Length: 437
Length: 179
Image 1 (cartoon, rainbow over the protein chains, first blue to last red):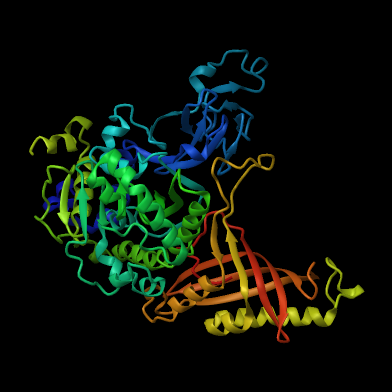
Image 2 (cartoon, rainbow over the protein chains, first blue to last red; image 1 turned 90 degrees about the vertical axis):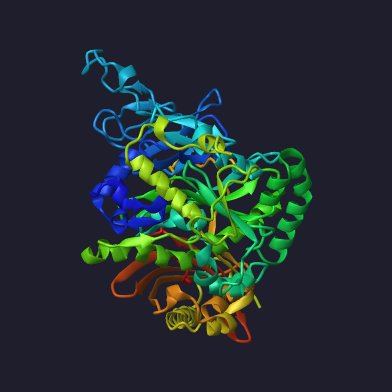
């Protein structure tokens, strides 16, 4: 493995192709990124009652997130502490306990070991059950979105989101808040997990070309993007030092919906805008009415407006599982939520007309690096370099227009910081950046 | 037109079964051959409901619906949405389908019964769909379909279809193909 400063160069603009292919780099990512970062698990609204749970993964670690009797949420590793077998085999549900199918050890919904068969006869009552609970995961919620981390030394989730939190509040902190509709769809892509993250975090560039056929047919206000129409001034891109970022197209939140869904959603946006402005000010009213492509480092992505919400779960350096939920505001009428949910499947579901455009691109971007000689080269994200600036009223670095590659560069700068194994105290933060204003 | 031999739940007669089987085979062939407009115009009713719900892996004794969970449909299409998908495929700028995806549909285990509406038939069939792309890209999908067939202008047409895929994690980069 080359030194990190050779893998990512020129402020994130140049990436060595090996970071999309090499097994040792991937294992280092598992250690330095996935075992340290806050990773999205599920949404509180999906597990409202005592004993409700969801199974998911953090990196390649199988985990369970469960609602406790006292209303709190806990998460633990889905692997029995006796011989390592999984204790939960479902997607989720409601349970009082998990029983390992191998020898019958029983774990409570908080992961503690509550019963061991033949405890008296075979263990002679000499077993420290307290020490043999399932491995615990630190859990925090940001406005209902539950994240977990394996790193006890990680900062709070709020600090981890850094400057992104202010932007996320646009819809997560709207009256009533936001929620996800599950269960998630699941599919696979034979690509590296970074390919779709960089696509969602800021790749406005591909929209007019890769999705030309869908834009032509779907109609709606985004149809004019087909074939790369001029985009000067119609949007903004944001990158925060914590590695998260997004691009926004102004006045386009509902733009990928068509017909009655567009009308119903636009009506909702028009009615809610004054409330958002009152609560969070003019800027976020503008963000509220815009369409976002966004990512929370490392592997959570969403499109606000189209309202698809995804996790790219790594499965080796060249494969991911894609989990897809629908993002809605809690206070939306049920009928509107249902329409948005159906539209999300039509556009970015596993059978979605835009999703299928992206899949092939993601896979080939990774798979081409199979070639040894190809892999010796680098890749280029230099679009709009040097055009990022600080706006006194907006956290992070912003760039005018929604087609440039500043958020991707920010993501790879963050990737490099983690991969260098820096302690949290030496990682860049929005707070530091703000001091430069 | 209900007669004793068309009671709901009863297997259709041999000649009707033959018609149903011919319809399903010809439909599969039309889709394999990318005759999507033929499929839309001649094989589907205008009020068609076309659905593919996601699988969920749950314990047998646990049927609790969690929180705001809804059935997530990968396809939840009406005739207009299916037409839109077909129109997109016809634009000539669907890069992921060019070179074309070679699809092969196998339909079997056909079980046809008269439905609770006069002259309509409920058909259960098992399917395998092999998808081949580029040089050696392969995906296989399998499951069952619950269809409702109705005769219009002397032709059987598909009035509704609910597809069940057996895989929980769809082992393919997309399922933008018709089942």
